[in-house]
Figure (cartoon, helix red, strand yellow):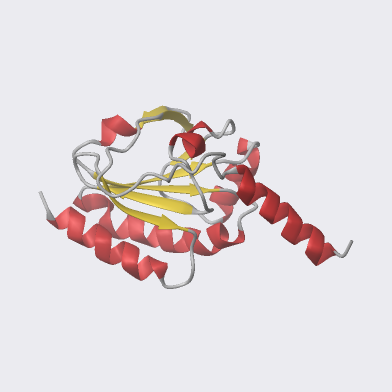
Amino acid sequence: MKKTHLFSLTVLTAVLAFMPLSAAQAVKKGDTAPDFTLKARSGQNLRLADFRGKVVMINFWATWCAPCRQELPHLNALYKKYKDKGFVLLGVNLDNDPAAARSMADEFKVAFPVLFDPAQKTGKLYKLRAMPSTVILNRSGQVRYVHLGYKPGYEKEYDKQVRRLVARK
């Protein structure tokens, strides 16, 4: 089997692993975001509910995901731009091996909190259907935007949405 076919098959298998067996949809606009607690790169356990009162972006990513690699620098810039305005970005890594995620986060000089979920419990909780997936919450923990996948240019939409939400007190 050619290398490109093997790579495509590997990526497809990984994506399908995140698809729920039922027809259940991913979290959607208006839902209260499911709470979770995960170990952060800093060593602390971080709980989503502890960020109520802030605009929160949850970005689900993995080291094997090429679009995730493209998106990380844009997420880092977005975090730096709005972190002093009541915005937090939580990067939830779904790799089986947190060491690989640490290495990639170091490589990209990720400034926002990176959380590790090697058991992929949050992926199931949020019923992920694509990688990466991004969920943006308002200050009360309600889902306002859901983005499946990443293509260059999505970061402009993220910026617009985050700017809108941080402006609301």
